[in-house]
Image 1 (tube, rainbow, N blue to C red):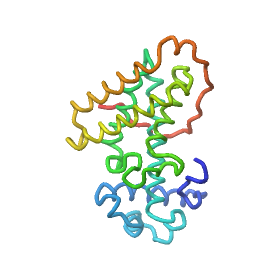
Image 2 (image 1 turned 45 degrees about the vertical axis):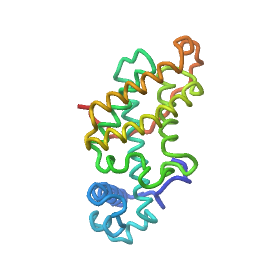
Image 3 (image 1 turned 120 degrees about the horizontal axis):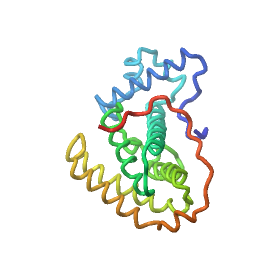
Image 4 (image 1 turned 180 degrees about the vertical axis):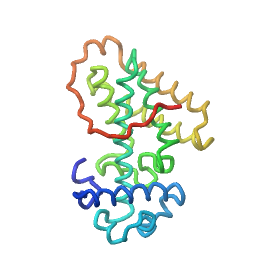
Length: 230
């Protein structure tokens, strides 16, 4: 990630240091599920991780930075899993990718510690993922790259439609999870239909065929892809 948005003061070099950072992040996720972001403190994180507070400050300046690192890793996990599902599924049209994106998000919401409280960071800062753009814009940009690569489309044709789709989906998903902690199934189904219907009208099949092919997007390896949604 660019240096200006890297929350780590320094990257752990030794295996022992890397393990301490992992413990801090795992502790943070567990605590957020228990006490929320407002109740989180660096002292609590250190105690739960079994490290000295001074050790935490070697890597993170404050609790926000710890949560930012956790959220950036969740974003990477989301992108890797969506990309993997694109490879596994036979998608007839680019808007059929909606199900893969939704299902990945829902699986993470239900299974990844703290994701149901943090999502992609809005509870902490609307620009937690990147100080230069809001969190939803970062998500839309990532999805634009993935879908453009998968279907050989010009990203310029997708950027605005996917920005609108992400904003709409975000609002309806919040409604679904306000109604039911696991997501109101009827509202989730409507959300998929809403986004798929909108996107299916934003680019024609002729544009798809004549779009200039683009090079592959390089995505860093992530070892823990999520299981297929239940």
